[in-house]
Amino acid sequence: MTMLHSQTFPQESTEYRAARNQLLEEEIELRQRIEQIAEKRRTLPLGGKVPENYAFHKPGSEEVVLLSDLFQGGKDVLAIYTLMYGPNSQKACPMCVALLDGLNGEAAHISQNINLAVVAKAPGQKLENFLPSRNWDGLNILSSFETNFQSDYNSESEDGDQWPLLHIFKKIEGDVFHCYTTEMLYCNTGWEHEPRHVDMLWGLWNMLDLTPAGRDLNWHPELQD
Image 1 (tube, rainbow, N blue to C red):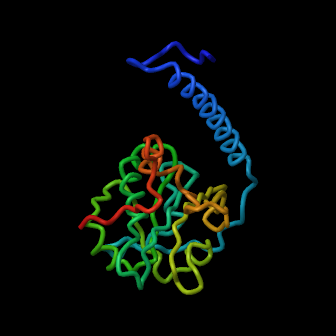
Image 2: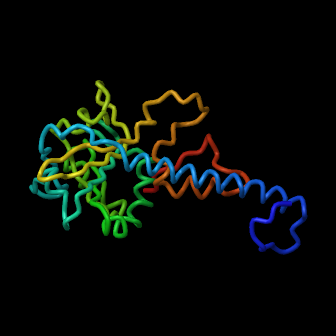
Image 3: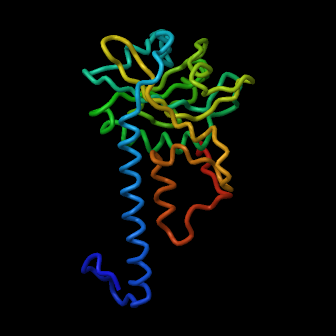
């Protein structure tokens, strides 16, 4: 039996320890692979220069927030999550809401390192009516209504359907460049489940994956009114 560490737990069997150690070796290999991919992500060349200084709107006010204004506090990196909530949507996507509920709690820590915003195509009034139900006090929520941001950055179909993506931008000497998008959403992976392109952000699924039953492929979070 490989000794990876000296810890055991009450009344565990030798079969459990052997299987757990084998799994632990694979978890270490996975962690190393994740680090390798993160390094490759950091060394990507710059993407394209942002074609315009998009004018977003703050829900509940007349305030216009330009894309360039989102680079605050001397930080030159901006993450934008596109919330699936469009002009014709009856409600915001429950899956996006579940992700953002968790991200809201992390936002203060994230914002110590990079800038973070959430953009939805829904008009400002529609967002204003929705937001009190969520208490997202840590997230900078903006409306991209009447802009081409979603369509330019492939977060919207030709029919106006909204897609949930995370985009990363970098500001260099006054110019803003696209760096990264969670493009696995577009891929036909051949898996029986969703692409899980933003699972790295999502504590809900990562927690369930640690349990004996794992995540239920037929279960999705629901909005709580």
